Length: 110
Image 1 (cartoon, helix red, strand yellow):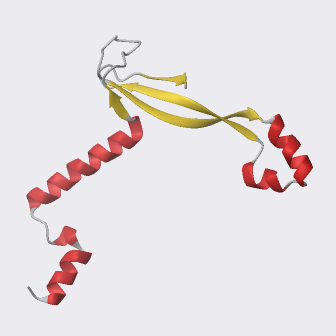
Image 2 (image 1 turned 180 degrees about the horizontal axis):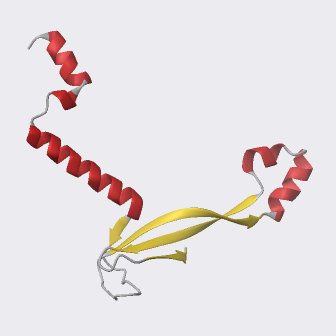
Image 3 (image 1 turned 90 degrees about the horizontal axis):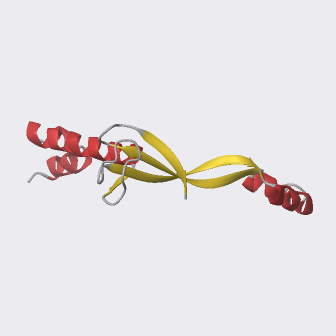
């Protein structure tokens, strides 16, 4: 194979794919985006609305919940440098759930 063509094929693979390969790549990208948005499916979780087992997606997120007194005290002791690094907000782990069957979503505490 011509070295220039080989390099172009490595650098820009989407221009050298067949139509079928492009469709398959598009489907894979959509699956990845769906998984990133709703999380992974847990086969043991039951939806609290439709009570379907096996269609509930689960992902962990961290939400800012309020003022952290411990961080404020540490900021006073360090002269404010730790506040610049960490901020004063307290973060709490929360589980987000999404049912693929009834399309309802809800949150729970981890």
